Image 1 (tube, one colour):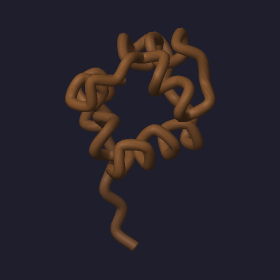
Image 2 (cartoon, helix red, strand yellow):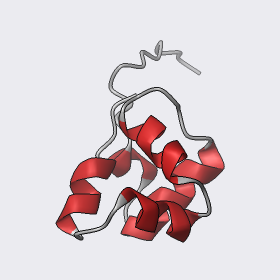
Image 3 (cartoon, one colour):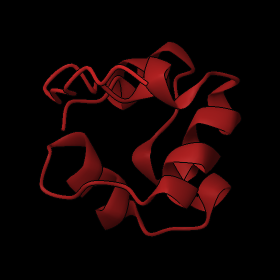
Image 4 (cartoon, rainbow, N blue to C red):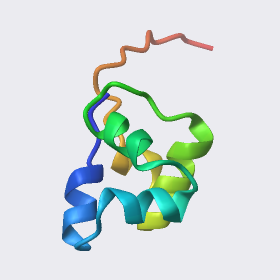
Length: 72
């Protein structure tokens, strides 16, 4: 999954380690999320988004997901 984490970190002049420490994970986890090898859990996605003061949708790109329209 594509994320905007690298751009957000760079805008704040923040290392992967600094973000990892702030949200309680390892640097390797942040690296894996940034390169698309790991998808963050909902809880971690929320922590990252809150850290940057954004919504989850502003940090993570869900455009690849298709949702069928259902009329209720």
